[in-house]
Image (cartoon, rainbow, N blue to C red; front, side, top):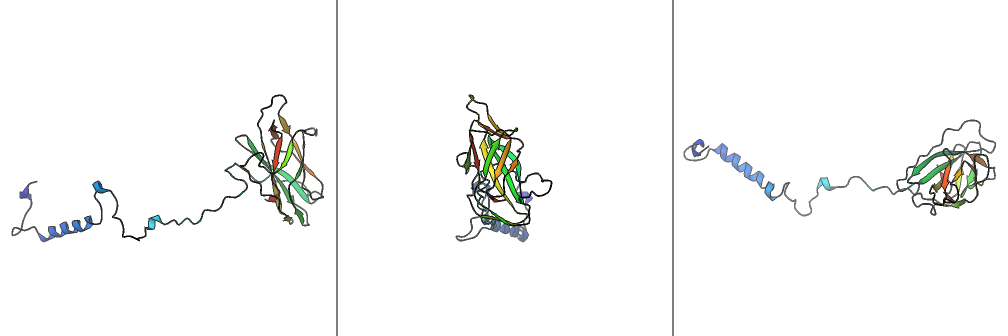
Length: 224
């Protein structure tokens, strides 16, 4: 459309059109053109951007156990039957594999009426399904010689009141590199918590597949 399309009154642009042009010029001062970079103009020094404030709060520190994103399921199957005379019940949780690494929680529950103290690491006896002892496996206090992915909280004195539980984790790898001997499998684990209340035997499902590693790490008892 040519100059003929713009009507003038008395040779001047109408006031309403002039007001629109002035408003556009004022608005243009507060932004950059697409060629000069999109977005609002920079604020004055010391200004605060609400969209840059971090309102998430501090990031919680990672727990020492379990760690490194290791798949880990806690909670054994609900035990049945009366509480043993010892006043404690020991049951296995679920075995969790992760790139050849295995973790099995063993949970001790005070199912009696008294209170007792628990400290340190469990003493374990390993056997096949028929009760034949499994030899050649070192039961370790700690997990560092097996993996750094599962932290050991270290020994601490725990007071277990009726209904309280404590957990120890059995940690191993299923690497099988020495074909001279068949891979080692543990079907039964006898647990002595060191309370002077006897031992209990648990049957993990599936069994502990230790391969040819000859090592089984344990964590100290800690609250479950």
